[in-house]
Image (tube, rainbow, N blue to C red; front, side, top):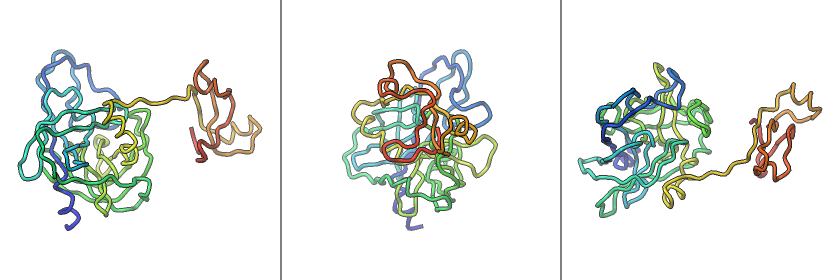
Amino acid sequence: APLVESVKGAVVYVEVQARPRRMSGMQGLPPGFAERFGMPPGMQGNAPPRQGLGSGFIIDASGTVLTNNHVVDGADLVRVKLEGGRSYEAEVLGRDPLTDVALLKLKGVAGNLPYVPLGDSDALRVGDPVMAIGNPFGLDSSVSAGILSARARDIHSGPYDDFLQTDAAINPGNSGGPLFNMQGEVVGMNTAIIGGASGIGFAVPSNLIRALLPQLQETGVVRRGFLGLSIQDLTPELARALRVDANKGAVVAGVSRGGPGDRAGLKEEDIITSVGGRAVDSA
């Protein structure tokens, strides 16, 4: 209870309105696998005006808010409600669809707002207790608790999947809300659930979010480097075929001509076992 009391003031309710527009259907997750909440089902033809709900959290006293990209994608008006009834219109400062992260700025804020810090998601261990706060189904400031069920989950929603999995109750409307550790630090942003499942929710790790923040704040978009390689796991069968002793790593399956990998001298059938001093266990 003291933990909830210390952080819940920084958790916000995000309301979105959008003009009618042509929609071609939801993209990203395979049909029937994972369900992005806060987003209406895709439809053909002219869609009615969209009203969406989601959650978010304040990360500084001046009113900078983090939420999911899919909560504010295509929005014409974003309004953020704080605990106690205060409400502010918000500007979308930046969005990164590939990690489903968006950065908002509240308008007309005098400062001194409650906020929560980003913690170290890499320090989490499977089994550690975690707590989610958000606005499921419009029920503001709802609290649920559980454990970290798994790390580095790839749910095939995009090329940078690295989700934390938790059994803390997450429902439609929790999207964009914080996942806390027991020190009151945000270690994840609640983002996705598996349709029809119970006790299986996914959060974007805080360390991934922290790495994106400078670009989102400065330019509003995230630009990424690339290697120009196609790679695959080093399996025991491949290791024997390539006559190498390594049992973990990534095999270069293809090199884009003129790309960074090509210019650096990488070739097909090269085996990458470490990058920047960190061991590579898989593609």
